[in-house]
Image: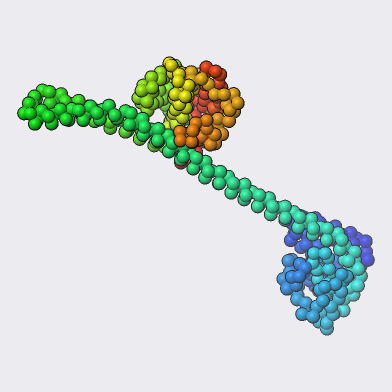
Length: 395
């Protein structure tokens, strides 16, 4: 029969230490092995300063009496008529083993004590892994928190950008409504004057009322055009280059006409592509508005914007070029940064081109770049022909 001095017993005991980096698993294997080899009735491991609750145990459950001495650097034996309890301290806690009163446990105590350094190192390794896992979890949670914070910031910036464009839109609506409202007011006053003078001519009245009705329909249609622009696209849809040109002309046309800006579209009108139309329009309007401001700053005599459609094997490319004097090379690399603007605080938010880049790159799954010289600036926007592969949250 094997004894505790048998080298095979020692090998089995030492081999049980450090097989797992999970603390509970490792301690359970150690206790089960030592309890079996020592023919103990039970074993448990208690953390330092926590003497009433075992982290793991094996075999018969037992509890030392209140007079049991834990604070010792070497193994100790607490003996009563009913049992013997062996206490073997390690750096991090205590191993306790339960024996019958007649058990000879000195050899086991000596054997187990010889493994205290290895046990302490194994426990430290498990605790280090637990700490690393906890740190990784904390880091992952922090990353998720930052992602959510960035997402919220992006939503706020998109809202700010849309509010800025809405301000531009209100100005454009005012420009488009001014002439029809003036005409309606003039016709109404003329009719009232004819009534007061008793000089109503039926044919002229019908003609004036028809003209008023035509102007009212124009005002209503203008509101619908602008309202549709701000209605978010939840799914990408097929749109043609001609539709894009028509909508941009409807929205920007009157404003450009008042400033004598020529907007020229070059490309096949029926060319279809799949995208979020209103989001793409928002990008184009940002670029066109910047060109309009550049013309005013540079006092360009014959302002022209060329809007060209090109394509590669898998992408459509939109080239938007102006002759507004160009962007200085010292700042062109910064124009897509948030809150960077060359305009005065009153006229610029610094969000237009930043949000354009966000929309094109993250939402439309494309790219946007700008190049410039002393004559003017060209923006190149590339989007996939078959549309964004994945949708995004509508803000």
